Image (cartoon, rainbow, N blue to C red; front, side, top):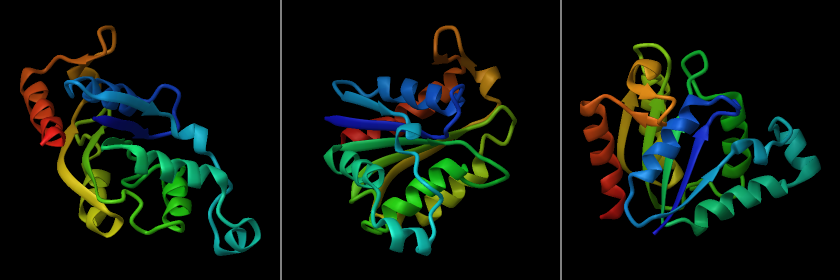
Length: 175
């Protein structure tokens, strides 16, 4: 299985990237590719820019990466209760190629934050809108209080209940 994983964050210190990388490592036998959305940076989307630029190569490349994957794991960072501007811009451009950005692929959505909310607001928004964008949502999980539940030295969750919940979520990708 070709598994595509990425954090919906542009931070070089992204805790969501640490989480999604760890989650992808739990999918046995998967050939994992972890993307950095910074590699797909584009001008801010607007209909005027779209008329001027057409479809940027970065959006086409991102759409192709999704198309080549058998399954996907995304971990959402939350900025003021919503998507990061970097992810939203990439998503907006890509959705102009095809509204079904995720192309019917099986997907697990994750989210985390340093606080007890675990980015549940953005995870809820993403999960609710998933069917409109070609997501075959197999599971979702919020990891609260990231630094209390994730060992940055070993790059692993250290809370057994959350480990079990994560393993259960990502195991749905293999079915």
